[in-house]
Length: 138
Image (tube, rainbow, N blue to C red; front, top):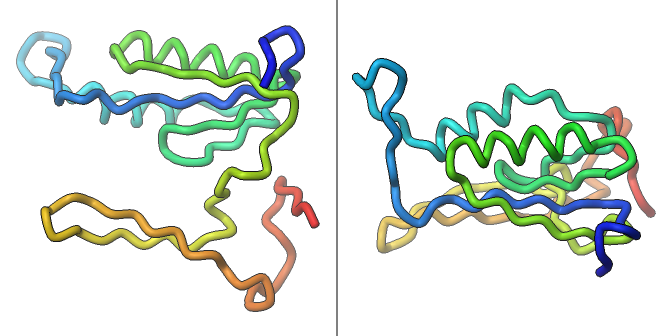
């Protein structure tokens, strides 16, 4: 870990609000869930080269090429009251789970909670070249 002065990568996490607050929409007729509105806005933000979206609320951003994306994500969160956290690191961490290497399945727990399970894809079962724009570390 290091401060912003020696960092090359920013790991940005948008925190889901603990309570389901709603903000009035324009005209005051309809209530809008700020978390869902944030996720919708994030999908509209064009991502710079070097920005990887790890999950719906988690990004790995190369600070050399992705500063605009970092700022736009922060602004979207700030407008809607979504807490944002950032961790600056010297290099991309190897301990992150990248979705393209895993099969994601969703289940409902006994208490009704949502459970997401990441199962590793067997590299031998994958055929064809890796997805464009992705570098495969070996």
